[in-house]
Amino acid sequence: MVQGWRWHLACVAAVIAPIAGLTAVPATLSHASGDRALGQYLSSECVTCHQLSGRFDGIPPIVGWPEDSFVEIMNEYKSKKRSHAVMQTIVGRLSPEEIAALAAYFGSVAPATAPAKHEGGKS
Ligand code: HEC
Image 1 (spheres, helix red, strand yellow):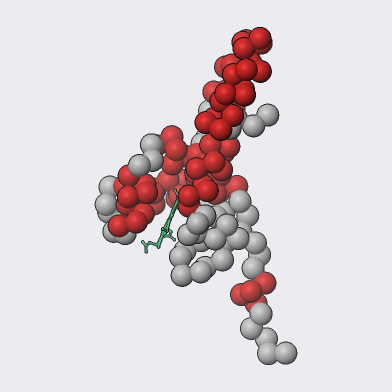
Image 2 (tube, protein in one colour):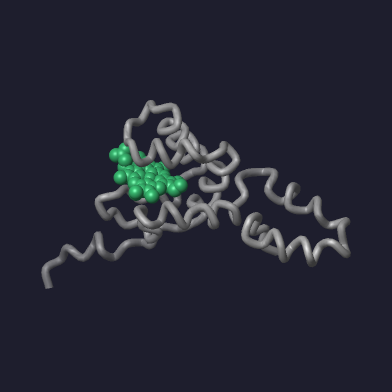
């Protein structure tokens, strides 16, 4: 069951209303770490720049990282310890919960074991 927060709120509410007892479920599921479904939703902005395939394309790849490191780096942009105007602006708009969600989502995406990197052999 996808907890697609904002997207599905309306339809979910309609479905859940008759069985209101289930509304507590998402909180339990997302307790351990970030809410991956929310992260996937929020990631649509990020992947206009960052390659979901994990390829370096002038912009560093951000998939497959441990969640802790991801959150740490995002917070470094937020606190302006890392200087990059675009990332600072983007992260500045995110709540800690949203950052955790993005960490959970991007961390779950396996970088494609890029054949591009090993194509070097002259054939
Ligand atoms: C407009 C393009 C753009 C968008 C949109 C964008 N980024 Fe970035 N991001 C960059 C660039 C460029 C860098 C490298 C900045 C630097 O050199 O510090 C970067 C760096 C990062 C890094 C650090 C990567 C590293 O290897 O140090 C993370 C993590 C990151 N972005 C996450 C995100 C997330 C999460 C989102 C969406 C909420 C996002 N970015 C949206 C352009 C973008």
